[in-house]
Structure formats: structure tokens, C-alpha cells
Image 1 (cartoon, rainbow, N blue to C red):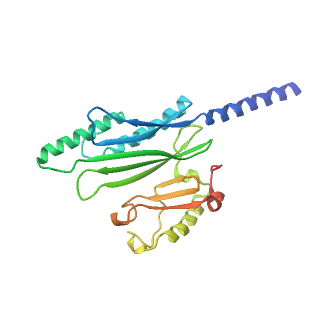
Image 2: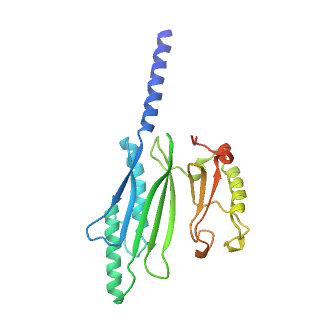
Image 3: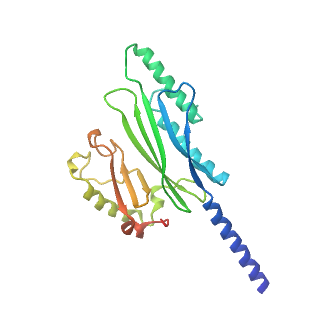
Length: 240
């Protein structure tokens, strides 16, 4: 019986340290994308490295977001499989547009920057910032957060970031009220809604509303932070 318990303990320890090692091997490095004759698109991204099964999921999600960010024009984009194809699509769309209009127009442009906002052994929060101009009075900046489970490579839904989402929502509303000087600028001043984008950062939980999400263009992006000393009781994942 003692031998069995000893063997079982060894198996448990090996499994524990193997899993721990696997999560610790996930790293991010800087990368970029470009194609020949590209004059309109600049992309600075990150590349996950480590366990193949895990990083392939992460990189596919990030690259998919980059491709989607280039879908700012009409046309069939369902066949696009790579970021490079997305860059070529954007350039070709502008060339077709400028030929059709047949008059001097400001060139389109898209710049996308990807950064790791936060990383622990089990979680990585990624920010994808896109500035796109495709004509008109002004361009538009959009920020997307993606939270990854580094033990699986899967995306984490916002609700799964917290042990009690409804209680965290109440806390968020208090911080929202502190950060909004003029609620009359909002589409629905008396109706608080959680943002689409929530992420971990070095200082706390970041909540971000993109332009037009809850307010007009003139208001811009609305962003505020709930420090860890306030958000800690509601977090499903250890931020240390």
C-alpha cells in the first residue's frame, strides 16, 4: 500500500510540474506583416510561441482579428485566409475605388498595433488597436481586447473572467459614474451597459467602450480602470 501511494504521489507531482512547465513556455514576440507594393497598410503584431496546439489557437485568433480589421470595404472577404491576403485586398479595394471615382482623393490607410497588456501563467490579455481611414471626414480608431487561457489557447468569455459577474457589474457601474463627467453625451444616459471589451492589465481590470458603442464620435473612446484591490474579490483568475 505504501508503494502504491508513493507511486501515485510521483505521478501527481510529474503531472503538476509538466502542466506548470507547459503554461510557462507560452511567450510572445513582436512580428509584422507586409506584401509587395503595399503602401496603405502597416501591421505590428505579436506571435505566440510554445506548445504547438496552444499557440496555434492563439495565433489564429489574433490573425483572424487582423483580417477582420481590414474588412472595412465592400467585397467578398470570406476567401481570405492569411493576413497578407487581407493587406492585398485592402490595397486592391482602394485602387478600384480611386479608378472608379476618377478624381483626386486622399489615400486610404490602416494601421494595426497588437500588444500584450498582461500575462500570467494562465492568462494573457491582448489589445488590438486599429486606425482606419477609407474616405470621408475622418478615420476611426477601434480597440479590441482578447483574453486567452494559456493552458488551452482558448478565448475566455468576459463572464468567465469573474466569479460573480453581476456583482462585478455593479462595481463597474460605480467606477463608470466616477469617470463620466457628462452623462447627457451618452446614447442612453440612465442605462448602464457593460462594455464588449474587458481585460486584465498591470494595474487592474480595464473596461473600454469604442466610439459609437455608447456615445457619438465626438465623445471618442471611453476607458476606465478598476484597481485590483477593488476587483480582486470577483476575479476568477489569479492576477499575480
